[in-house]
Image (cartoon, rainbow, N blue to C red; front, side, top):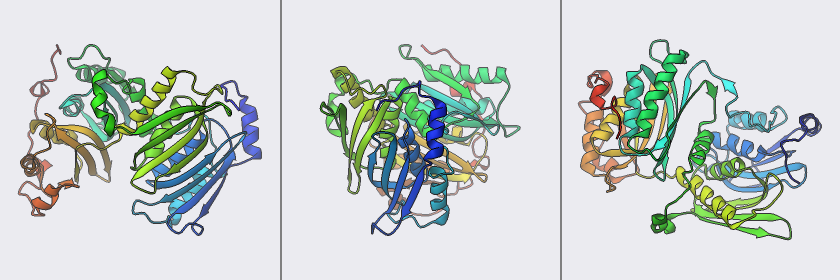
Length: 443
């Protein structure tokens, strides 16, 4: 069966009404996981929709079996919570039923991506060349323009950087609507992102749409061709995931096999990329119960054909490698929790930059007046982060405000309070825009 953009929408709606999705949640048949079975009329994108719902709940998918030949889609997932336990929270189970069962309405256009306007914030999408201090400069620009970052996610991969930021107006606390101001924001941010690299384009997009942040980041980096590697990347071969693509000519399938270190959201990342590359998954087996994850997909292009050429095969491999690598958490993990305020992110990232640290990935959230941010940082020169540097940063920010996760420094530093625990109550004096060196032409 092949999928086409010319498929009759009314026919699809009729099929859905006649065959509504069915979800069965089973906590008895498997001793160490909750089993979720999803049956539904088949359409392109439905697998990603299901995986996205489970992933957004921070559930760990340890096993999966997928079959979608013909007009019917059947999925079985073994899932646990972050601690490896079965899912017993009634609120979570009810949400799964409502999101994937008869009450949901699967739409082939993927309802969660860019279809709903938001009056609460303005979404800013950024892509450009990665370099040390880039996030600090971006945040300084936004602070100067009186924009408050309420949430953000930043990914870097293969010398490229992408971010989705949700900002509000400093005075009103709502979305920014003035066209001239939005144009000014785009112009200044594009100049920062472009830097001194004139060979690669920098992009800034301002939107009032509600998007699924992680899927947009995959789409943005894919569009920016972060999967393209230069010849001198061969030294990293051993560290890359093992991806192979072979054709099964008897069945007109291409079989994609992936072996990589397991991590949260791995299945979402690979399914997202296959979907956005317009491949349909007809069968799949996933096993991630050990430290290594094994994924096997039987795919065809949306036009019904398997992978046709060596160039296409290599592109599939490179794109899946990139999808897995983008979210790999390189660097030291730092967690910040403090009272939110305008300019907070700018001040924190400035301290990182002044201590020669570069941010490789970041997740920024605010809730109830609290900022809860996670940064993965590395030394800008490529060396391991020195413990003295971390001590210096924690002294500046506050021992109780900034925590070091998963490293010996966390234990060595102890739990004593810092005299600067109040940090952002006025320690940092505001700096002018020119002080940051942002109002200049790059050469």
